[in-house]
Image (cartoon, rainbow, N blue to C red; front, side):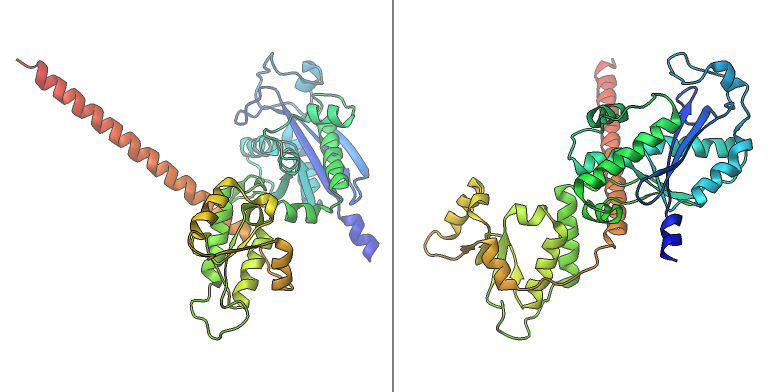
Length: 365
């Protein structure tokens, strides 16, 4: 039973080539894929060549196959059921810069009036950037060269194979399973369905997003009344930035434990305990501490080791709701940003109108 289950856990890595590079003109000409088992052993590799819907082939596009071969191949509907079954029977679907491929496949289904193929997916390009803290997204050829992987460029099944090997390298290097990796770096699946098309989310939170998650957690857990004295009821804690931002999940566990022990959290200006190791005290913090302790000691600095000894065991908390919470927050931030730009544009247009009206009046005899 266990062996059958593990065998069913196959990974599909796919890549698509196009004759024009456009996502909306039916230019998909190859669908390449690799299937692998849960240990990343490749069980099947294939490049499906098809005649695109458009007759246009851009000269700047480099293709692995001769144009005549592509033009004489069957079209996408011939391979639709085969491709659909690949997605249906795979538990994990990956690609590199995969949103491009998602759009190519959706466009082909739309042009030939076929049902959209629904699936969740992961973007290995984004995972690589997140795990290794790269400032920009890396090209697959660059990563392959860095890892010493040889492959045939511009061939879809080869791109799919290298994508698999890159993900395998990341997991081996971090010594994490795929589920552990996604959880640690807060990476969420992309979704392609009839009701939603959303990308694989970047697992790196900005400071603003971390603050948002912390504030939302505080709102949900803050105890407004202290029902008893004792525990940490006489203490209000402030923290160094590394404790807050290095691991937001652990920091929220800390907050919950403090509240459970009847303590409070605050800033250096309001706290009487600062949790910070000496090497993490910044110049700004030193100034704040000096101001706070001007006449007498109002805030005591303790190390993280002392603090965790004081706290004891941290509670286990499920943070799986972060995915929906952050997605809604990011959408709201985008909405407000769009509204703000519209208002700014309106103000500029009105200012220009007023300026022109004044100029007309001034120039009038």
